[in-house]
Every structure is written in C-alpha cells, then in structure tokens.
Length: 154
Image (cartoon, rainbow, N blue to C red):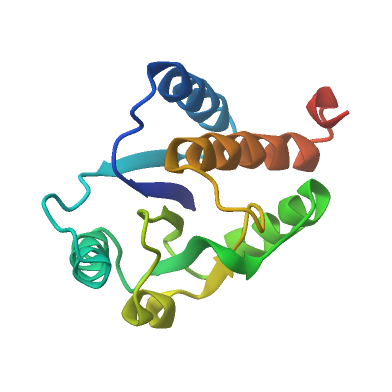
C-alpha cells in the first residue's frame, strides 16, 4: 500500500514549500508516500476550460487500481481522530494506492467527481492552494501518529 498526494501547481511560497517537504519526510517514516506536483494549465482564463485541462492532466497520473479521494470544500469533514480512522479504512481497500488530489482554483470537473471514490474537505472555508497542501500533509502525518499512539496529537 502506498499513499500519493497529487497537487496541481507548485507551492509558490518557499516557507510553505519547506514546511510541506518537512511533513512529507515525516510521513515517509510511516508508509511509502509520494508527492506529485503537476504543472497547472497555463494561459487559460476560462474556468471551465481550465478545470477540464487540469483534469485531463490529473487523469494521466491515476490508474484504475487507485482509490481516489478529491480534496474539496464540499467534501466530508472529519476531526483528526476520525480522519485517522478513515485513513485506516481507505488503506484496507484492495487498491494499489490511496491517491489524494488537491486541484486548482476552479474546482473539479464532473468527470473528476465521477472518477473519485470519495471527496474530503479540510474546511468549509476556501483555503489557498499552498495552505491546503500544508494543512493536508500535517493532518496526514498527525493521522499516522494517532494510529501509532504517539504524543504528537496531544
């Protein structure tokens, strides 16, 4: 079992990018983990076309053997303890990888939502892309420390 996080667009703030990298290295101590940064579509001002092109690029990074979870403000919210338990359930799926996807500024297409097994919300508030990536990697790390009964959560 492997966990993958795909984000559309490279984090722009170097401080945030370093913090994300720090959590990625911590997560890798618990499980095989891969962070993929996909170049976001360029020169597309139309939100619908942007989302369609973004999904076309994202779709190439997933396979039918993956359990796909979109991160979207309209998804299901969990406490840290609930997320840890849910993560354990997702990892029990008979899939090659659990793949989390953080999309771009215009949300996901209907095709993306149809492809996903679940949708997860980090907050009902809209989070800036870099912040969403940081919050998610921290919560993923926290979920593993909860599973292992480590002190980090307290």
